[in-house]
Amino acid sequence: MIFKLTSLISDENFENQLPAVNHDSFDIARPPRDSITGQLVNWQGKVLWQGRVATQPAQLTGNDKIQQGETLLTKGDSSATIRFPDQATINLQPQTEIEFVQLLPSNFVFNQVAGTANYTTSSQTAWSVRSLHLLAKMETGEMVFTVDKELGKIMIDVKSGSVTVGFNDLDNRSTVYKIKTGQRFIFIDDIRQGQIQ
Image (cartoon, rainbow, N blue to C red; front, side, top):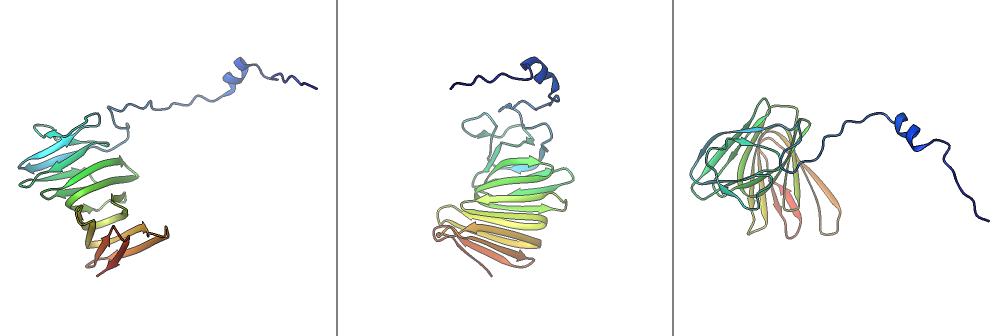
C-alpha cells in the first residue's frame, strides 16, 4: 500500500510564518562585525604580518591594526606591542608567532605557535591561549607564555591573577591545573605531562 503525503500548509504560507532572521554573511576577507580590533602601538626590528586572506606573511610597513584571523611574527631582533582598548596588552618578544584566532568581546582566543609573549588583562573578557596540546585561560592578571617548538615545551609564569590550564594526556584523560601568582607551569608536549613549580 502506498501513501501520498500532502502538506497542510502550502510552501508560500509556511515561509510567511517564519520569523525574519538577520544573519551576518561570512566574508573571509573581513572579521565578524562585533570583533575587537587591536592597535599595534609599538614595534621595532623586522615584524611580519599575515592578513586574513594572505597565504604568506609580509614585512609590516604601515599597518597598525590587528584583527581576528590575522597573524603576527617577530624576527630575531624585533618586538611588538598590541593593545586592545579597555581589554588588554600583548608584548611579543623576538622569534614569536601569534595567531589571533578570535577577538569577540566575550572571549579572546590566541594560538601561540612559538616564542615568548607577555599577556596582561584587567577586563572580564576571558583570554585563552592555545599552543601544541595545551590550553590556558586567564581572566584577569598577567602571564608570560613561552613556547619552545623544537623541544615541545611550554612554560607559563603567572605574574598576577591566576591561570587555568588543561590538556589531554596520552591516554586521552583530561587534566586541569590552576596556577596562581608567583607560580610557574611547565608542560612537555611529547609526553603530555605538566607540573607546577
